[in-house]
Length: 349
Image 1: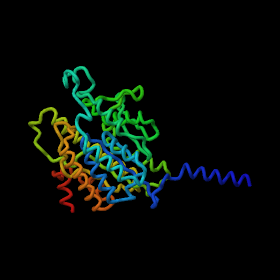
Image 2 (image 1 turned 45 degrees about the vertical axis):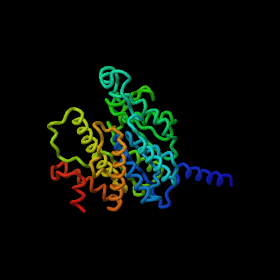
Image 3 (image 1 turned 180 degrees about the vertical axis):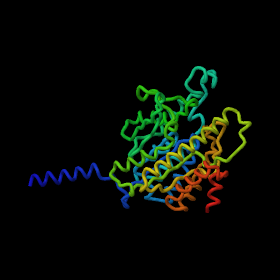
């Protein structure tokens, strides 16, 4: 009898540690991957609000990953328990609705950008952003990952929900630190970290593997991705671009194609997973000279565009938006299509 009791206890303990935690009623693991993108992450807020409104329990994500400023949106959601999505999205929308440039960065106290170029590690003083994070970020109650890049060797570094809150705040700060514009972060460990998008623009594999760690089979994993990099790269005359506009053009092109490469590789590597919705801007997300203007009118428009694009992606049906954006990218790369993603969708609906 003692042996039987011991066996039963052992089985129960194994079940506790191996079985998925708070599994959805349909037996699925829902994952969310959020890309970075400066103030364009307001677009994510709108898209996420629409998914939550339309999908209900199927938008109660078990796993959330964030890169760059997308990690802020992810961290806020991860700090709310499953079932509390509306409160989470209300908090995210309130953050973006009230965010100002001064909350994120400021000029150096003397010398401004010239001091940044000659004597500092960044053009701007981003210490206000650390203060904002300390006020905003709370300890996650869901599985969560944030990714930054090690400046010394270029490798990605991931922190998850198990680190202490102070480290998590610093990790999100690091992940959001655009090289050259904002300060890299050197007070987590002996290394210096910056922008997660430098190494991985979106952390799809982390989201998927955390579901697998919970014991889910690939066919029971559902992942949504919300991008900020525009699928709106029309051909344009850049001959009169000055240095900053040319740099921003480079960043948006590189970020978009890097993300599409990661998405295609993920789909090829995890063929049974449901890449349910891949939501990307169908309108150009207007920002300032730099992608950190935090203009209230522009942010409001981005949120609205995010809602619209999410609604369209959901209406297309599961996996259709993922298939279509990958097809658009292939046509774009092969010079078979010169329009933007909105033009492509208009031609294929």
